[in-house]
Length: 209
Ligand code: GRF
Figure 1 (cartoon, helix red, strand yellow):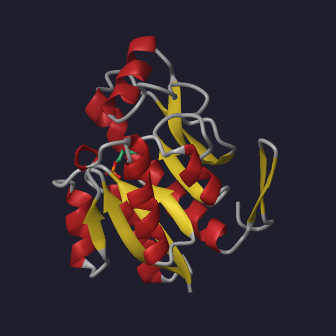
Figure 2 (cartoon, protein in one colour):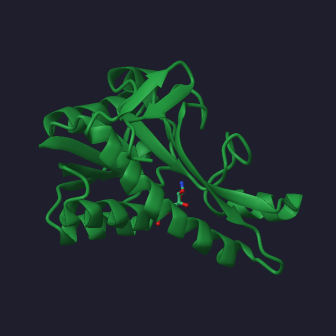
């Protein structure tokens, strides 16, 4: 079985969607490890309830970004993690970590990249920006992680209409439902080596889209 590691900072509803898909047999892999940068992330509780090894690696406990990222890398290696899923992880990975897992790290972002993404666009701020701009359509994107912020090749996207009267809460809830559909699907393709990357272009093995 392939080994997945999940990194998160918050509630972990995307982790839950991946755990459920593993349990259903839709993702032929094991979640070997869940890491959070925040000690009180509810995602850690979700992992523990399923007996998945889970740890907090808090940036504040490390002198430098290098040693912080080194600690993450060591945990991933120790737990035989082959693929990394960022499920609401609010930190930027070091270039060394990205290089070690080139095209094996994916992230879920709650907008249609390249709109409403990059530095400063995280969590509810993304949905607030969509509403402030007056966009009529938003959505969710799963993409590979490279050295930039939300710049890696796009694997899956799905649009969500912005409705009249939407608030950050109502919009984020509808986008989250789409995230819970896209992320497990992308993880399943990834661990089965059904994603090919050529430059920025990603092709998915026929029959899986
Ligand atoms: C999701 O909207 C994800 O796209 C964003 O942060 C949120 C995390 O939600 N990066 P959860 O912790 O998976 O519930």
